[in-house]
Image (cartoon, rainbow, N blue to C red; front, side, top):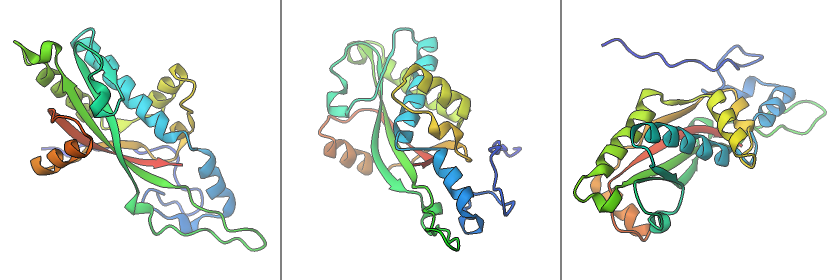
Length: 217
């Protein structure tokens, strides 16, 4: 099988010629790091969630018209009726790839702090109309949601900009960050999923977890 080559972000390192995602922040001067910080902001998490929701909404409604895509806590998601997919951000952690990035010291100026780099973890769950009786439509919805993320595992800048244009409160800074936002399945064993649903205070539902990274704040 021929390996799939993911596209590279057009914004590469300015000084060292090396890709920042590795990261090579130590090779950057203060101006470069401050430029990176302006590419994203505290609204980045919101923007990513809005963009993911929009992709699901468009793809699912093309497959099963009338499907509602929500971003509610799982214990409150089923306050709506009908076919539904819920996208819930359940965990955020600092990106391990950026953990050792150090402030860049520039003589005569204050050290420039690198951006806060995060990995986001989402739980996608599906609900079928009439609780899947007689047709297990939630299986179809979850399969389509997984296909939408698998077919294009990159949340591209244009997609983020389009989503935040429709939701003015989201903020589009993350669309300009130097690295793509990548979507990857997060394998969880059944007991891990069960504990997660128990912690969320909701009955277990068919679901799948994803890691979305890296998001700069």
